[in-house]
Image (cartoon, rainbow, N blue to C red; front, side, top):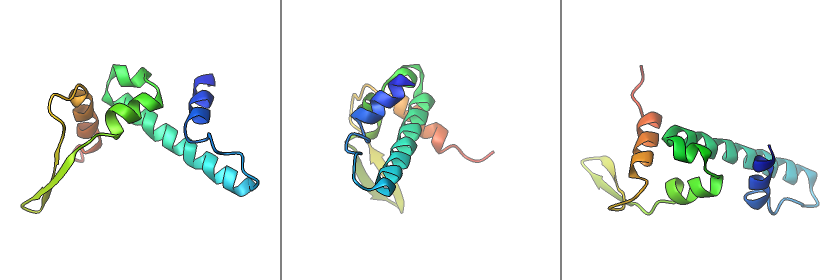
Length: 101
């Protein structure tokens, strides 16, 4: 729990103390939602990112410099060559975009 509080204070909740209670409540709810989604994405990728901090997951899996191309009405992501986290991203993408059962 202490790690969660530390990550929220160092990340999205760093600018929280505002004079408006509703603004703080909304910011906390959105920060918790973003934290939970990031941790879930890290868990789906594999063992390394399951233990990593949110900043590591953001740097390695979310903030990816891709080139988006369109061909035959399909969107194609061109990921960086020799990207060290290609397998983790492929695991996440395959899990999230799996066909329905």
